Length: 161
Image (cartoon, rainbow, N blue to C red; front, top):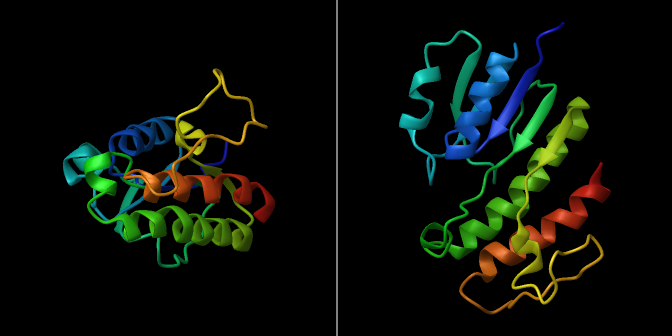
């Protein structure tokens, strides 16, 4: 089996750091990218000496030029206390971050996993939601920067590649 080079954005977050560990244990090389807005160095500290792990401090709202085989785009503050602190940056992380990662995937012909959330549905009126449900989101509420950011990215990401 050939070792894959995998990029994980938001890799120093809780989910991202565990994904880094899993993918390394499966025999891959992992490039973890994070700007430490919500992720922490403590989450990836156990991986720092691993020869198959590389860390890059980078904000996904700016383009990234690396050679990789797969991308897991997890970058976005998901906690209200964090995304409400800087709503414009939250929206940029969702939208520009996804555009930049999709562009990278297209350029290097990499597979990409674009993380999303049930927030694309907002406060749903039906349970469970089907893929054709348009949702019930308040575009002016406290959560709008996060909700609308992921709503904008999710359907459009599928059309990009």
